Length: 170
Image (tube, rainbow, N blue to C red):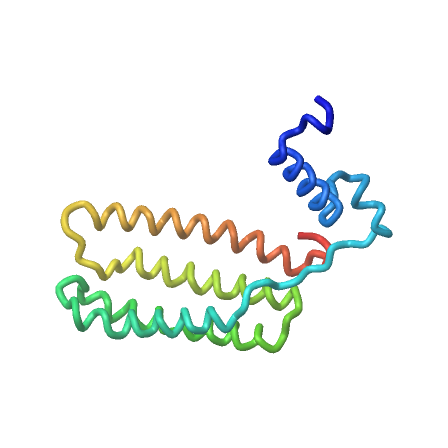
């Protein structure tokens, strides 16, 4: 098909493709080496200030929700609550450090520490299970918590090794 017979929408799409190719490259291995063998630098894209607001919301939820739904929480909540508070404090401490230190190893060390704290809180929550779900819903939620513990443990394992990897590797 000749260029003059190409529909206008196809020509615009082709032009857009060329512009993107020029801007971002083809993604082929030959393109990566033509850039003076420069490694991609790691740059943290997450902002810990947003996580601080999330932790504040978590604190309000675990502190004030049980007063409004007392029948949903069992006496085991008194044992789980301090553990959740410690996890929130650990998250806040890591976020404050990450506001001032933006190094890659510190970021992954913080992720590892907060994930370990989260795993501990989930284990405490699944063993004490301070919720009063109707029927078999409680068993399903406990099973889902065990799955979450396994998944977060695997993620934590790999994030731990990212602490020691060179800056250019992901």
